[in-house]
Picture 1: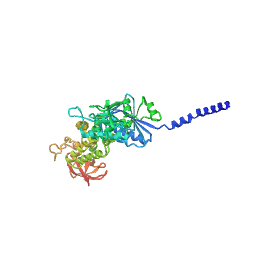
Picture 2 (picture 1 turned 180 degrees about the vertical axis):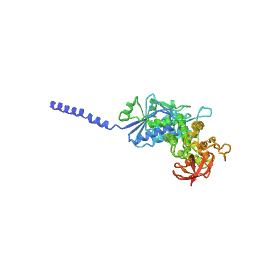
Picture 3 (picture 1 turned 45 degrees about the vertical axis):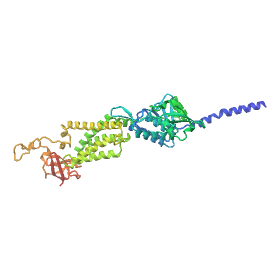
Picture 4 (picture 1 turned 45 degrees about the horizontal axis):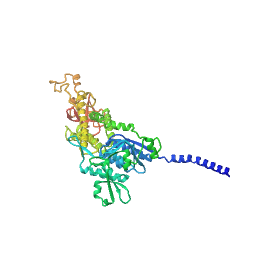
Length: 500
């Protein structure tokens, strides 16, 4: 009988030993997929647009968990609100704020919007008060209207994610006090602000305790990881990414969505110096192309420069089709001024204003600055665009000495008279047929002369008259190569022709 019991115990022991293997496999199979997106810069339109793109890619990849690795001093309020909405609106995915160092100001609010906040014990979160730079360069608390919008946004977010509403609001309001309160009936604990206490109908059911040390007067609520967990603002503390993966039950190693070459190109193209070069070179190339119609090196260079500018602004989140439309209209107005309307008047000035205005608008996400910081940013963008225009003007002055040697550009500048155009051999008349050959074509041709288009006129091109060639502009219609054309007007070096 004893032998049978031992045998039974051995069989049971074997069964116990064999069970963990499939259980371990099942546990491993249950591990969720995750990706990590770094946010290690200040929050601005460019970094915000890049984060949105990464976040959308993560959602589209159908991962279970999106981890935001946050180490940021915050930034612009409206960009922060957009990122908070993006996180709050994410469906069928868990969002986690992983704070290893600092999540300050807007970065703290982005963390607040996540489903979970996991911090290192010594990491910091908070200090989300909205400030602006005054005219004297000193930072000040924003006006009450702006603070009210921010406070309501924070309260709604904290309520949605189940965090202490009063402590969350205290991150944005240095004037309020927050204390610990205990319910007299069931002993439940709640954090209540002095403002809320005054408006509570059931205040007599709560016993008011001490003020939270980090939520005192004249301070924005800021805590480290350990204290955040104690107060319910964070869910857990971990020591490293391995513990983070274990706490979230996600597969390791956790893939990190680093910035790609495209992201780096966008950042470089949005820098002030590169923007200056793109605009200055693009303007010079555009003038060269307008002076020699028909797609050439100038046109391709101009398209490349302005294309890179608007592409980087599109992906950087500051430009849209409105800016591109205004820019194209500006070019069309300037082209009309050069080829259709004599002189330089309303069309030319309006076109120039549209071009420069669209370039400034493409660098900003607002039309009218609402605070000193936005005004300063707008000033730098205007300075960059005007600086590029000044560089363009300097380049054109330098090119003016050589512009006549560039094919198609001769008609943009007045040339000195190389040989006289006197009558009957008078003073200044050409002394011989060889001397007349030295007279520029625009000077030899006369109204009423008939010639042949040396190439397509779109509307500019060349015309063969007798034994010489002259740069001409059609009256507006397209003229194919070889068609007979007649000179109908002369305005300095500008020769206007029409079909014969």
